[in-house]
Image 1: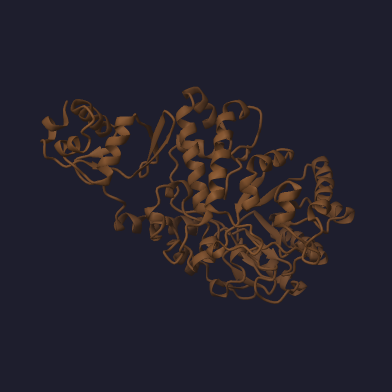
Image 2: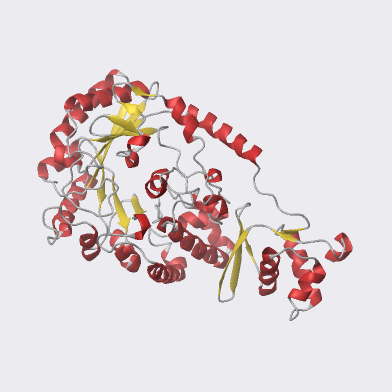
Length: 504
């Protein structure tokens, strides 16, 4: 049935919010509000683009597209109406009433969640000088001090009290470089195990380390106590050394020292069934050599590999590590090559950039916030004993929530954090990829613009956002090229056990 006969020739036609990607013969559009993908032909894409630029009646649309057959244009319009991409009234965005209801549900849900973890900064000193470190030189803008035993003991007591009836709690030993205060690490583990036992809680320990100070005694302790290590390592030697120089001797290779120590730890950890993970910070050298970086990380047996993007205010890096627009083009081309190999490789390797996005596309996942942990599941505690929403906020005095002696007003914090979501960001609400990422990490947003949601204060688009758009666009094209059978395999992937090398 023709659109004119149903609605009248002069009825205005409107378009939904969408984002279209084209590569050779493949055209696929992302219906933003419904988080779904729709494959288009050339004429449908042309009609959709024209209506988006300005609503039009059918006669007006035909005048805009004089080279197209009128009946074909009507067919394309009707097809787009049938899939709810076009309509005869404006499509409405989420209303203030729905946003308020979302915040009420979010707050109610957060109040039910158990607090059970702390990130304990056992030191604010570091032996490396990474220019992308959010802790500055490891001191978070304050004195380069170690945490005292009294503060550590009080922090453990705080965790035991605040975790209430939870039968599980966790301490992540953090810094700076936590192995610089190894005696306190041993004390915390001993004291926390004793206190957890009194409270009938199981306690787990983690540690983020650069690995420089690892030796056989430390490795034996960490393995014996089953402390889950996350190693900061940025990839092959040339990339790692550019990103992670020593503080005292910048010309010396940190990779040559660290890699054998990490390998020695892994050897003992695997024999003793200890879990470990790797965390790479993505900089310009990473982006330009992404395929080599992925091959490097595939050597490791762990499924816990996290890529985090280095953000620099105003895109300025002291060591020329900031990612440029030209670098993004190189990155996209590398992703295209990876996508071409995906059908073959995904059955053989455990790590790829596409498993997570493809599964989210198939399940029409909709994220409305980035992180549900800060001040809810856990907090970060500075070497002085001050409490912050998470380890990434330590050093921002204006975000301080309290201290380990007096605690913090959790309900007051939750009321504030319930409003940290993409609907309250003037930037994110206008971004087509918003429901894929749910907005940036609140701490990253705070670092860039002084607010936990993105605002116009940030003059240039964060690199996180640019990279995620590229990943999503290439995943859209790949999704359109996979068969139904292959998509069923994607849906069965356990993306927790089969870690996608996605950018956080």
